[in-house]
Length: 342
Image (cartoon, rainbow, N blue to C red; front, side, top):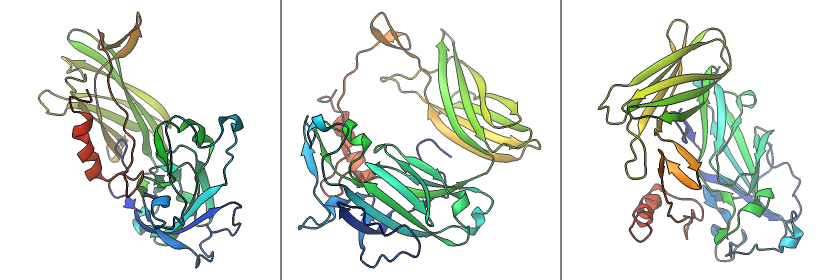
C-alpha cells in the first residue's frame, strides 16, 4: 500500500473496453450481467473521454466549453435540463488464484460525472466525485482463479455537475486508470500524519493508523526517516488488540521543516505484525514536517507569514480529453513552475 497509488501486484485494467453510448431513456437491458447480449456494443479506450472517440460524426456526443456560465440555466437548479447521456463500459479480468483468502478491491481513478458499478452482475456501489478515486470492496462477489465481468455506467450529468463549472471543457468518461488489487484481510486501512508543534530544536508529530480486520493482539511499528537518510530514523510503536485508530507520537530532534522554498520530506513507514513478529501489512508514504495556521489575519507556515501565488491547471488534452499521460504531465511541469507563473 502506498499513498495515492494502488499497491504492487495490482492488475491495471486500462485498455480496450466494450462500450455503448446512449441518450434519453435508460435502455433497460441489464447490460451489466455477465450473460448479457452486448453484440451491439462497440469499443473504446479506457481511460479516455468518450466524446473524443466518436469520430468526425460525433456519434458519442460532443464536448462543451464554457467560461463562467453553466451550459444550462442556473434557475433550473438542482435539475439538469439536458437530455441524459451515458456510457456503458464492460471488461473482463481473470482474478488471480493466489488472491484466495485476501481482500479484493476495485479502484476507479476518476469517473465524470456519476457512475454505478457492477461486478459479476452484482451492484457494488456508486460515486459522484469526478476528480477523486473511488474504491469498492468486491471480495464477496468475485472468485479467485476465475474470470469476472466488470461493468461501469458513467452518466455525464449528476449532482456534481453544479460544482464543476469555470473555464473548462465539459467531457465525460473514465478519466484515470482502473485497477483490481488485493490486500491482507488484517490490514492498514489508512494513515494520517500531523505536525502538532515545532520548537527550536524539536518537532512534535504523530501518526494515526486506522486498522481493519485485526484479530487478536497485534503490533504497529512506525519509522520516520529523512529521504537522504542523513540522520537516524525516529521509531515508535504500540500494541493493539482490534480494529480502530491507534495514535503513535513521534518526537523529531532538529527537524528539517517543509516549506515551498525548502520542501524537505521524510519517509513514513508503518508495519502491522502479529504477536510472533511476522509482518501482516506494510505501507510507506512521503510526509513533511510543518505547521499551518491562521493568526491575526495572516496565513502562517511554520510560524512565518506567507503570501500565495499560483494558477490552476485543468487536466486536458486535445486527443484524449481528461486522460493525462505521464509524458504530458512532465511536459507541463516546467510551464507551471516558470517565473512567468510565479
